[in-house]
Length: 126
Image (tube, rainbow, N blue to C red; front, side, top):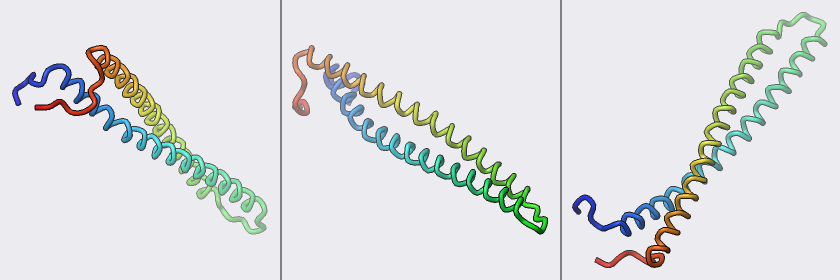
C-alpha cells in the first residue's frame, strides 16, 4: 500500500476505528486507578488507626516500651501512601482528560464523515 492511498475517507474511518479501540482501554485503566486510589485511602486510614493505637498502648504501659521508632515507621509509610495516592490522582486526571479528548475527537470525526456524504456502514469495498 503506497503512502497516501485510500483517500481521506479511509483515513477517517481508520482514525474512527482507532479511537473506538482506545476508548474501552482508557476507561478500564481509569477504573483500575480509581480502585487503587480507594485502597490507598483505606490503607492510610488503617495506618493512622494503628499509629494511634500504638501511641495509646505506649502511654498505658507500666513498663517503658519504646514504641516511638515503630510509630515513626508507620508515619513514614503513611507519608509514602499519601504520595502514591497523589501520583495516582494525577494519573487518573490525565486519563479523564484523554478519555474526554477521545470522545470529543470521535464526535468531530463522525460529524465530518456524516457531512461528507453519510456515515459509512461498513468497510469500503476494494
